[in-house]
View 1 (cartoon, rainbow, N blue to C red):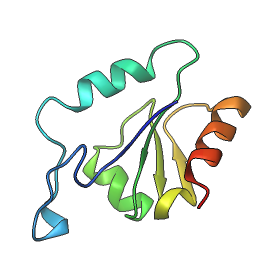
View 2 (cartoon, rainbow, N blue to C red):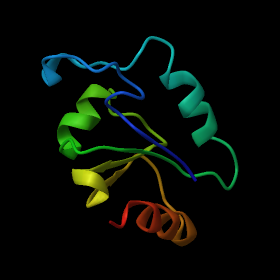
View 3 (cartoon, rainbow, N blue to C red):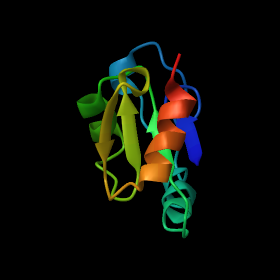
Length: 92
C-alpha cells in the first residue's frame, strides 16, 4: 500500500483550498507506482471525493479516499487485500 495525503503532500498548502493543485510532476511517479503488480495506491484526504477527483484530474489506477478515508472511489479494481490495507490505514 502506497498512500498519501493531498494537501501538504501532493499539493502545497494554500490560503484558498479551491486553488490547490498537485505539484508539477508529482502525479507521474504516483501513477507509475499504481501500475506495479500487487501495489495499491491511494490518496487520502479530508476533502470530499468529488473535489479530490477533480483536483487529481480523475486519475485511473488510484484509489481516492475522501472524508478521511470514509468515502472510496476507485480508478481501477481494488483487491480484497488492498481494500483491507486501506481500511486499516484510515480507521481512526
